[in-house]
Amino acid sequence: MSAEIRITPMTPAHLVQVMEIEKASFTVPWSEITYFREITENPYAIYIVATAAEEVAGYAGRWLILDESHITNIAVAPGWRRKGVARKLMEYMLRASLGQGANRMTLEVRRSNLGAQKLYEEFDFSVAGLRRGYYTDNNEDALIMWQYDIAAYLDRKERKDGADNGN
Ligand SMILES: CC(C)(COP(=O)(O)OP(=O)(O)OC[C@H]1O[C@@H](n2cnc3c(N)ncnc32)[C@H](O)[C@@H]1OP(=O)(O)O)[C@@H](O)C(=O)NCCC(=O)NCCS
Image 1 (cartoon, protein in one colour):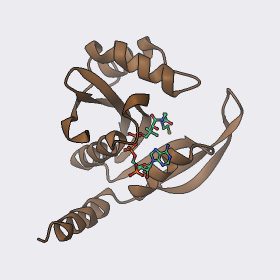
Image 2 (tube, rainbow, N blue to C red):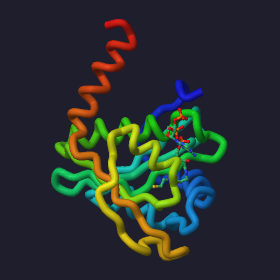
Image 3 (tube, rainbow, N blue to C red):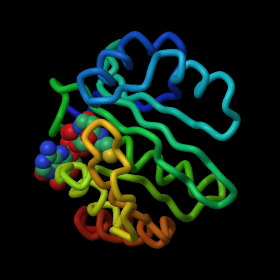
Image 4 (cartoon, helix red, strand yellow):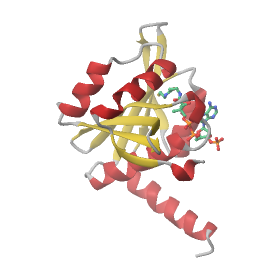
């Protein structure tokens, strides 16, 4: 099913569907106006959507600050989960960050969000620190994860994919 997925920049036309996914995914969802400002006004923000035909299956955003890329959000519609959509979004973000001169990427994730942590570990993120009580809804800690060398990761991945394809 993930073969049908296209990754494109998020536009205001996507926001109704983005908000449905946002509300289904986060206990403290961002507002539509926040997303609107992120995609129309914030020069450091880059947001993408994963679509299947006209349907938004998921989205992700990041801020580019000098040579660091900071993931702000990633979410996939409940009906699209475990089909590789987030993996596609992450890979796109890593490649795009590198293309813009950022070889390092960071994010925060709830300590209890083991599924997301497993996704990030697949992309060579590792835990580098902790923000105690970062999530105000339940006072949960955030793990700070870093990927310190995107180029090396993508290089290893291309070699592995080549080997898997018999090249
Ligand atoms: C986390 C989230 C973005 C993952 O999206 P997804 O499209 O389902 O993820 P993928 O299908 O690309 O998963 C890739 C790999 O990540 C890991 N993974 C993803 N979700 C997982 C889960 N719920 N439990 C265990 N592992 C999980 C698995 O290793 C998976 O590979 P596999 O399916 O072959 O086992 C999605 O569950 C979501 O939107 N959650 C709510 C919002 C959220 O928590 N965002 C992250 C905030 S930091």
